[in-house]
Length: 305
Ligand code: 13P
Ligand code: SF4
Image (cartoon, rainbow, N blue to C red; front, side, top):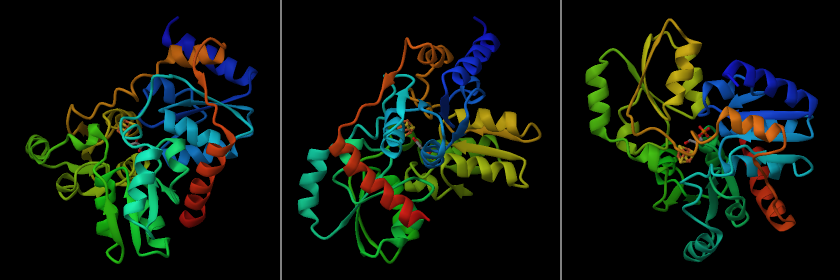
């Protein structure tokens, strides 16, 4: 089937089967086009909880589908591509963090949403890249253990100087690979361009940016900005989406290293197969995990309001 026909079939099937399709902004354009909601990880989790549909189909990575299930346990939540994990979320588990917590008694454990549901059960509050600074500032405790991303954690620490923030050695291998040298090369190639980066990049790269923000933050900034040329320091799909959204502006990728294989794993055929009942994986979480992780996410919503 060609892409347009496949998209038509997907639109028909999702209506017939009452399915809400969510697509993270790192998904391919043809998937974003058939989604009911697109956006960053925070926006998608809120959109999913408000949707009236019985079934949620997540085009993104596993922790995002788990977050939807935690927020909407009564709904059937399907991950469109079961292989789509997240290299950062898989770095730390519940056993490791339970041990680390013993070394930091009295600390509030703040978990980036890019963590497994199981790990969230031993943490106090979740954050996303768009809400991390606000939430950490709103936590009463001065002592914070921020996991797993030491780069996002360093960015938060710089914005929250009153807090005592301890970091672990984790992060996104895709964003963390981008170097100061990559930035120098991109700036030399596009001297008039503004640099917009995700806070998962290393602090030295963030320090060279004109704007630091979540995927949605970067997109909003570029759309509203009076500037005409940008270097995009996050997964390369964002530069592609922006080029369609703002044809009068120019978008360049910061580095070819910024390709997330997990986010690229979902195809339009996967989406179609999920809707016709022959693909995807239903997210099943036991009651203890649902309850423990929900407490962590509810705290994120309370402190982020
Ligand atoms: P956002 O929270 O900005 O959507 O980022 C998710 C992610 O996986 C970034 O690598
Ligand atoms: Fe995970 Fe990094 Fe991919 Fe985002 S870009 S989904 S943090 S591996």
